[in-house]
Length: 263
Image (cartoon, rainbow, N blue to C red; front, side):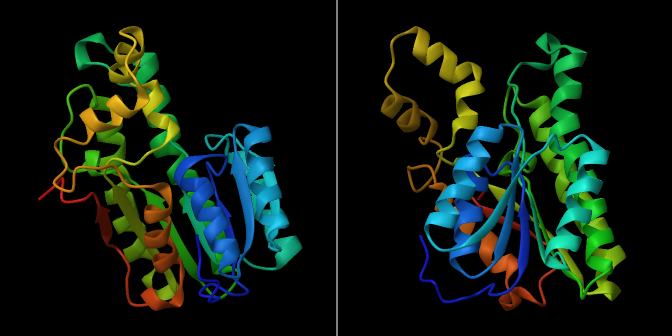
């Protein structure tokens, strides 16, 4: 989904969690708009499929298997990108998970797993993104938060807390890097049609009752004023804006895209 207008032409981007959902849509869109894109995911086969689609469309891309909680891997990938493409202009910290349980039912292990990927992974990406961008002419870091980081959701204690923290982390680093021409923003989507929902208890209960996928989306969209979930490409369009020079005066902000859910 692109008009191929070159909005990020000649920029170098790294997108985590690019094997599916928002990450995949973002990587493809950035490539269609002229960026050279490094895509990463814990699932190598899925991210290689994203890379192959970009290459088939005439773009330039490389794929990495990445565990975002490994600092060594972050160092390796960012250093390789600087060696291969001489710079890093855009970083999209998108990788994340959701474990939905009430607080008194959630194990410390589950809590720490969500925090490690959703928050520690974003911290490490932001840290090494800043290090790489300081070696160049600056850049744009976009951290994917959630409307659930603004409006509480029952069963989302770990997820909501991690996404709230991502918003504040982004603002702090934006202030720290303002003089280095490095912009840091977060994006907070509401409901998006992605595979992450399949890990929720609501989805599992629906499947156990023999419910249909369309029924799930309809039920989940009821609180949303526009009565539907977003498509991943709609979130990618907002990320593209923050990645481009069109948003050169935008930093330390959180862009909410939720169909009016938070209003």
